[in-house]
Length: 129
Image 1 (cartoon, rainbow, N blue to C red):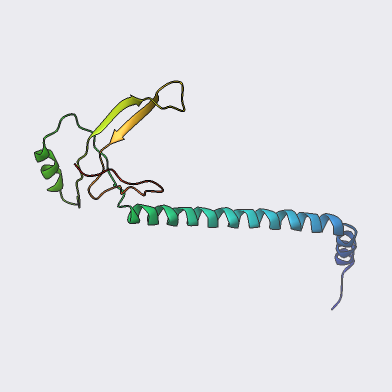
Image 2: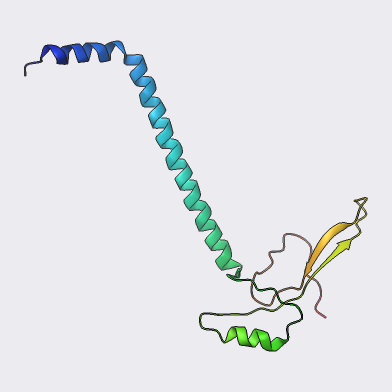
């Protein structure tokens, strides 16, 4: 194989820039590694979210109504594609706490029957009734 003078010059120039070439290759490799890591983390977070939503029966749609009778829940259940309707009561208020000077703002939500299951970390659920 015959090497032309231009090819020899190219090889000589590349040999002289060995440090710069290695640095550029490392920067490109770092960028590719960061991209792959970010994509992997995104896929893992999406899988974790889907798993949590499935395990806790997280609702797909929320509807807020003022003083709706139970018949509205039955009407919503009759819509095609609706698997479950879980009516509940939500109230806003303030709650005095010993550890705080001002009362805390609270949102009180009745415990659901089947959707958006609560995962209790410590303590106990309220007694029924």
